[in-house]
Length: 240
Ligand code: UDP
Image (cartoon, rainbow, N blue to C red; front, side):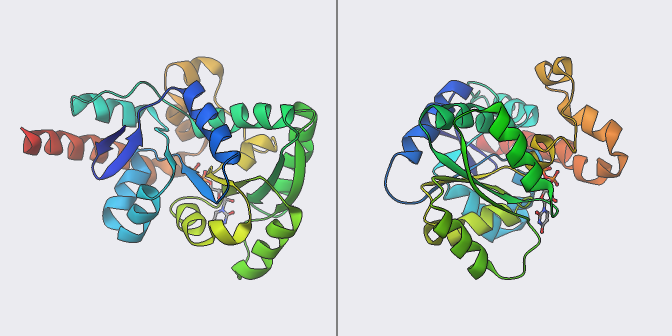
């Protein structure tokens, strides 16, 4: 069942269930894709019908960010919990490593995906890195050909939102992969270029605060969070 927040339907599942569902999709013929919207992306979708369409059409819509959990609570339809994109990716890679599945890393600045691939290979023995490509390409065709030729089962698409969501919707089939996952800045973290927030921040749902302290220029983007909560409160009044 999906829980609607400002037009985006979120799957009401735990982090473990999300990984199981990812594994199921990875083993089901056809192309599938997963998205991990946070409040900022929900706000982007409200202003961009193509982005909304891409997010709504995903096979798996995971509630990434404490703001989404608050939003669901405000609306009186609480979600089971937060499912961070990075946690989902880690759970999926652990399963893939056990089953000899292969992963293509797409996105981030040149060199980052290679570095992420090397580190992930060491962290998940058994995981096959089918290929990598940076996220600053002009034409989709050659990149899709590369992914298809690599025979990857899964592609992590890290082009930032909403570019990655639109890209997966348009190109999932042509990639030949079973599952594509939109993961924003995850390759920067997997490569070691960007540090994830300390565990205590993660537990308290304060990763955004850590990010803001490290990159104060993100303040403009983060102001979307209060706006999101305001819009959610408005939605609650309308639903009464
Ligand atoms: N990026 C990319 N191609 C683009 C624009 C962005 O590969 O055309 C990458 C960028 O280098 C970064 C990621 O997409 O690695 C977006 O990171 P951000 O932290 O903005 O994403 P978030 O997780 O906040 O959605």
